[in-house]
Image (tube, rainbow over all chains, first blue to last red; front, top):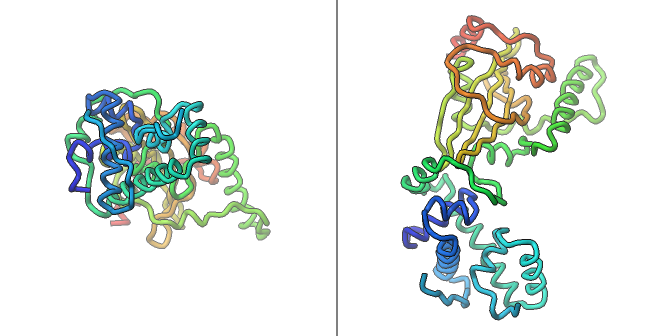
Length: 63
Length: 259
């Protein structure tokens, strides 16, 4: 987990641990809702890739 | 919507319960007909489980301080929450099956009355066939709660923080007799300005605190430094057959005796 960029870990902590909605996380982080979604999706796909769980659909668009 | 166009963000939002019902139904249909969509959904579900495990408090990876401060500074509730927050006192209680959703409070009080009735019948020598189980009460209580039960006088709440959440434990009243010492406390949890609370009665017997009853509490009380047994707590205490709460001096004697 610590290998992920801080912005990804932040959104992971708020949504996946604290249970905030995407909109609440966007408010806390002061970023658009779309940014929360893209960071969260990237964080989770990156996490799964690093765990070698055969996730092959990663196609990250620039934020 | 063609399944090949489904983005990771959309599938993740589906897994997290963030999509409107109509879109969620469409994703479910797509997953039923496209194994690739189903596989990607499974991966996002698995990622949630892995993240929670990685942030497990036992593994000492706390939420960063700047996030904690940002959440606490926000101070206003946001709309649209669909999932219950995790890693809170209330979650801990919920995990042990003690927290009852607000709409079911009537049933909860009915259960408590059932417990009291079961005890009375048992005391009269006729054990009821369907007495409510008290097995949950032997599960360990959080250390912070035990500290309050052991040391804090009624009306003297203790504030702790749990990741981005603030938890207050406030003793409301104490009850005692020759055989046991029981205390009613309110545990409230606040996140984003939204508070939830439960009231619990724990009794100390044989040197151990055990939960005797638990019920929803509505809005938490403000902290007060004055000794003031809570009048509103009598319904819970009465359900367990307790009489009047101990006076401040009587309570102090019990607390001193435990040290």
